[in-house]
Amino acid sequence: MFGLTHAYISSKILNDINEEIIIGSIAPDLVWNDTLIKKQANIHVNARKFHSYIKNKYPEYLLFAKSVLLHSDSTSGVDLYSDDPKAGYAFRNGKHILKYIRKLFGLDDGQSADLSHNFVEAALDILLARDIPEFVKHFDHIVQGRSFRKYISIIAAYGSIPQIHIKKAFDELLHFYTRSDYTSIFETIQRSLIPIIVNRFNVLSPIEREVELILNQTIVFIKPTYNKEITHIVKSINNNTQLMSLLV
Image 1 (cartoon, rainbow, N blue to C red):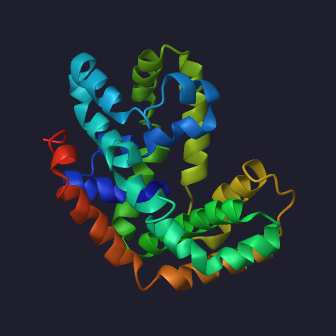
Image 2: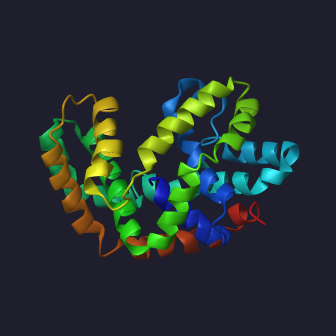
């Protein structure tokens, strides 16, 4: 999932919308922006270990660590329901646009499936933003307010890495996830999809109009089901006694 969806689901499960939950819900994706973070401070893969570290060292930020737990597929968090190649919502629905992705970008089947799931994630954020404008304002106020700064030293200490790595990764991540208008097709393409297409799949100069057509198709495909899927994720996580025992 993209940032807005992660934050919304975490807020529903933890029944709060404070800063720790919002920032914690997206912080695991820092690993995608820095190889040193991915190696030594991988709170995405090692969410349980990070939660234990925070509980012992920084108990005042335990809610932040709980939101990190809710993000990761390694803890049966939100990403499990989105990114599992067989059962994940984004991959299942990405099949609707697979042939367009394959044709437009010349990718193999595995790469096409991976990229198609990113289109579904982008579409989900747009649809959600249309439905919950007040939450969007709150999300944007927190992430644009630079409140992530207080967590830089904590994550850096956990991974024994220089703080500059965490700050730079946060800056890049928030550029990727934030918008001046979270319902904007154009901003979603410019800030998220084109960087993914170029940097991860090595496609040079993708045609923006073609990307827009596929994104619009994706929105049409998932619009009838996305709300039901969010409800399903919240209910499934609430019923996961092992995960929920860490959130009390």
